[in-house]
Image 1 (cartoon, rainbow, N blue to C red):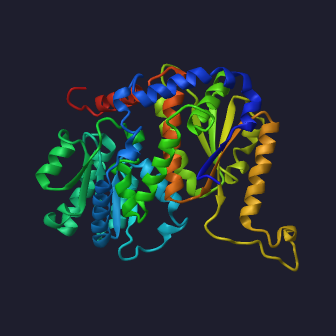
Image 2: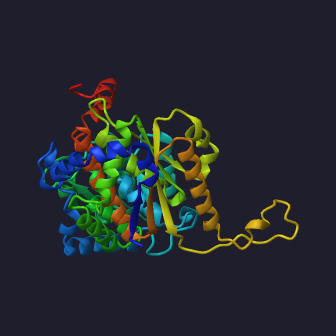
Image 3: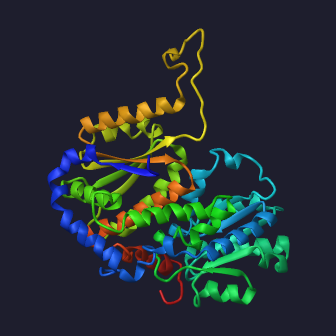
Length: 434
């Protein structure tokens, strides 16, 4: 099979007419993305980013990652929104589920995250974990003044300099920021930190395939060249309109369902490693489409876990939802259900079956029940969880997001509403000028 396959059959049943009617709108939207003729076209640097990423940049990122790996047991990725979600999505998807219960091995630091909240307890507990430990910092901010990461970096920088000494700390801090301006750029130049540039034409939620995501992913020990190669493959297969363009097909189907009254999309996974991929997807679509009082609301669930909590609502609640299921065809390992002579739990009918077979039947049974209950269902199948397929999946969702936003009639690349809470917070904190 291909690295990624899309099946819309069980969604098409609900809105085939509207899907057929929006073909021209999708072609126009794809053209705007590819040719840069739509609103927000100054933020389309991600479109050809995978194929234009120099091998030299990837080599340099790997070298920086190796330096941090050799000198750190923990590396803290400081950022918020797109500045950490993409990296965390990939790192979690590729990690052992219980990675953080194990002590770090030499050359294999744990990647931690900070600056994504303003919790005092979280900050204090992170500091406690890092007491006396070898750690480094990757700080990610275009301006260097975004409140959440700026607070976290100020605290962690102070701690690192006290523990390692100011001279050594300089080589344990990497700044990913603007090329020439901003508070973090100024500090990095003054202190002599190694730096990487956040491209001006790539917004935060589309930045996972820039150094913003690639460096923390490389530090975690994953192959960023394979990640980018998967994205290149998807970039090339989604340039032109047609049935083979799965990003266009997905964008058309979700807009057809939206026009038919389905206002909420639930991204579903049957693999817990994909939890933070769901979180990354929620920001990508929520921040891109939720404006002008329009937009499909992006929600997410982890099945089968959430079938025992949200399953009732999805099955019989208001029929304003549709589901997009991410399914992983091949698990990394094989484990079978054992036989038990007493059979008190009644599971011997499953004895000898792979756990994944049970999971796949739960997935199919859920799909059948939800479709019968009036919930349209799309299915994305990944061949397996690896760097190549995740790179392709990232680019697939990014391209589809651009197409879908233009079909919706919004600028998918701005986020004017994000500033509202900040203005109120700054005023309440008596920040000068507010």
